[in-house]
Amino acid sequence: MAFRHKYALVAAGSVGKTLIARLPAKSRQIGPVVGLSYRVASRIANSLRAGRAVRGLADLDRNEIILFHAPPDQIRALLHLCFASPLNWQGRTIIFCDCEPPSGALAQLHALGVFTAMARSFGVPAFAIIQGGPHALPTARRIVRDASLRPLEIASGGADMFSAAVTLATAALTPLIDRTAYLLRCAGLRDGDSIKVTEILFEQTVRGYARSGRQSWLWHIGAPSREQLEAELCALDSNLAPLFQSLLLLGFETFDKHPEIASSLRHSRNC
Image (cartoon, rainbow, N blue to C red; front, side):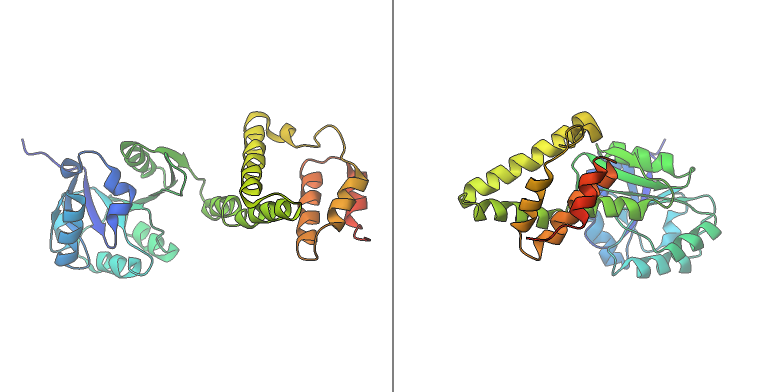
């Protein structure tokens, strides 16, 4: 009996950097490969060392599950190719791998009877997030696990919130790390020491939260010194002081602690 491949692939761009490239025994899992042109499809198949290039979506007729990847500047063109194809889409499953389809395109696919899900890495080793309809999610989950990653399921409508969390913990946090090292240098520490101490402080904070959650907050039980906080606030320049003040107030409000100090700090800046 001839081996039937698990997946077809519709793709553009650098597929070798996606979780598709992590699938084991790719040559036996991926069958037909479609690109914006036959030449592109051949390049993708060669780069993956998997699948075989075909000239159009009509060659996917025997494949119920289709992996899809395209960079933002090519995704609409590749989706247009799908919509222009005479392929019967009813009952097929498309898994968008490491790419974000436009919401309008998802609605069109669903109207054609396609089940969809998304699976993508997000910069944390060993994890990938998945999101989609109940029929397609098990397939997305299996693909992620086959790629030796742990799937994290995102609730419907939660993708932007998840992205905001990642941004907060990465791009939004980096300036705070930089300012911490800067203050240590201003206090007299050498460059190397300021960076090392900054690293230790942030790592200890994260480890403490992983162990104890909210109770790891420095002032969960004992209140800080109002005078000391005001002195620290006055030591900062006009750019950093408002951020420092806002972060402190965020802590008092988030953990619902020490309202009297929060009230004093909220009106403080008389240096």
